[in-house]
Image (cartoon, rainbow, N blue to C red; front, side, top):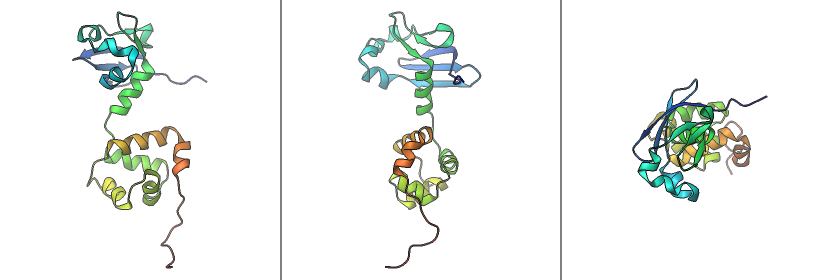
Length: 160
């Protein structure tokens, strides 16, 4: 069985470091590559705006390449665009439901207070980037959740 790998149909270059990508069968996505270019030595030449502007779809949509033989896979670009997309309070509620976590279990797994979880769920506070990253990681790799999961019994604890 093969995975449904992302495939790029079209791309538009917007100012340095930003690619708008149309993935086959999916909506347009945006990937800001500034962080990747700054952190990865092999991509440093792409900090030149004129070189970055030469981005083109390569290998029948398997990636994006530049004239100096540098390239990034469609999977990498999809992952970056996914991580950079908004993770809303509604996304948090869906995440919690999909993993069947109580508010206390979610708080324990994320190292947050129960009050913070309730405030996120109700939309009183936005989802912090660190929380969104942790939620996405736990969703993608259930072992991460299991490593930080503390099952709770219903009801209040007995008084000491």
